[in-house]
Length: 402
Image (cartoon, rainbow, N blue to C red; front, side, top):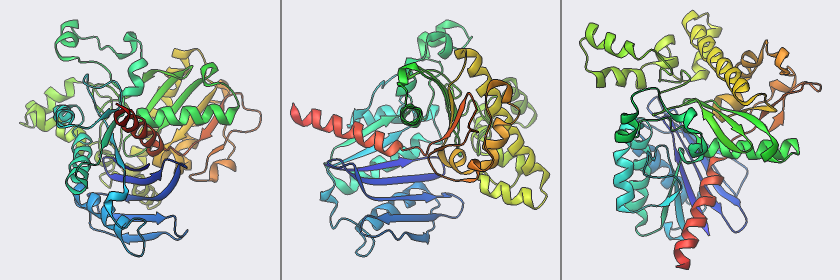
């Protein structure tokens, strides 16, 4: 079975075509800086050479079209017809209370995902664009939705409930859901392999840091807490999202700026975070360039981000009664050594100490702790696509067996 995985994020879109008989990646690529300028990187298994191009991607629809075009390209593509693809797996951020597991996509499922757009306004729309674009092009090829929220369903009620009148949970299911579940699940499993210990015996803190960021406390392989909440706006300050703020700010801005609550939320979702503080960009690489040029606001934005990560790690260590390893993953976590260093600095008393030489590497799975550190600090490139492909294969085969 060949599975095409579409992982559409807030400003990027990763894709892989995977042969599930061998788990071999036939082709993979990345569309990044969507909505900024647009860059496409593609690699097929015919050659180690990467195809790179500046491709205008004002929207996620344009990114999806670029992916389909390159997969069919005579020189760089790996298939001659879309019928060679047996199934498509889609990352979908928010399943609300509709879905606690991955599911075969039907019209009913699409409507349910649409109903969850208010909970994930930056992510569910591009997820749906990927689903609808593939449905239009590929016809009846089975597709599966894999939800970021599923892994965190193991959280106890004391972790996922908000201290608002209980009737709102009963009526509207207002609660902490958590996101990036496929990533947190994957890197926790990889961490157990790296440490040579059963996952069930470990206390782990996984830091998925990118344009969208979240942290999870994983005790015995189960998510017991996570930084994102009812929607992906909660928790850490991110590329364009404010993260955790006093909710009274919404009413204050509404009154003083003469805006509706929806307009304020839009600003907190799309114009805040690193972009809002720095005034430069939502991209951490652009922030680094600005910092090197002496931009104090860019430096402030990054300092705020790093401090927020440190605070949440500290709280989760207290919550779990210790930690065996801290894992950094996703675009920023895997590649930004200054973030890793600043987050772990002054945590020696907890047994956390990074080796500055090991920390120089980018995007490589490795232990970057000093040799004698009690708590291991790991960099593990995430592979959400593999998790999505495995779920897709499982559900499609189950459906075919009926």
